[in-house]
Length: 63
Image (tube, helix red, strand yellow):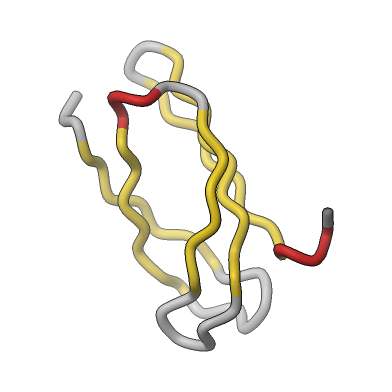
């Protein structure tokens, strides 16, 4: 597995598909990345188990 992996997600605000970079060297992580289309903050939850990457995206105001 590469240190950085690209994944496509749907923005929870505008619905557009955007590409995000996942740092696979960090294991489980949570961070905020702005949508490249509507600029809204997206909370990304990442879990890495061996070769499998789980990615969940949510609205920053859901917390």
